Amino acid sequence: MSTVNSYAQGTPCWVDLASSDVEGAQAFYGSLFGWDFHANVMSPEMTYYMATRPGGNVAGLMAQMAQDIASGAPSAWNTYLAVDSADDAAARVAGAGGTLLVPADEVPGSGRMAIALDPAGAPFGLWQAGGHIGASVVNEPGAVIWNELQVPDVGAVLPFYQAVAGLESETGPAGELASYTQFTVNGRSIAGAMANAMPGRPGNWLVYFNVADADESVAKVQELGGTVLAPAFDVTGVGRMAVLADPQGATFAIMAATA
Image (cartoon, rainbow, N blue to C red; front, side, top):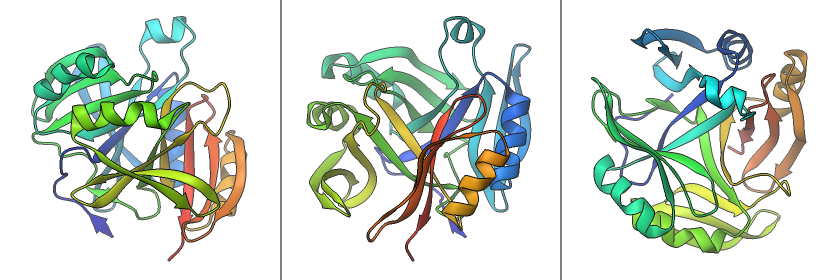
């Protein structure tokens, strides 16, 4: 088991799903990844579910806002970057070329958060840990193993992430890709970035979940009513992966990592 007690600034620390069908999402991901769900009533209108594996929290789940459903916005996974101060990081968003969607605000007993768009329109969160650090279990089957920014022009957004969250980056060959960017914190690779693999898809942070067997997981996704967007493929030195969508249309990826 890979457990985490804290996250350095800039590191992806949490993911959550805003879904048009919370019960359907629980059935899908619970069966696919072996998650249990624990409800936290935030208000009469809002319940936030913690998805857990043995050892701790792995992800969050909440109902999509009614106005987002009405506008046709799809269900989606969100990635949060750890920051020392959500207020300070949020204040840097506009000046770096992004858009602040939700100003820094307190999540009682858990931490402080903000939501923003980068200059390419990819949404992401900023998380200042309090009682909740983010995911306490990572990298094992059923938990997050990688987060990857996909935008039309990677180079154009790198200065934004450096300014907002202090992320450094390195670009070079990786597996079958001639060019792949890795975000680094204190010299350690913590996330990736690449040009949109699916033309026309808006900028986004793609979440990868670890699985023991990618092909078996792809078959399970189809059995549960999900969709295969990119069938299982191998990346030399990294692992076998696939890009999928849950029954509500939220895109995610799976990876059986090379040992």
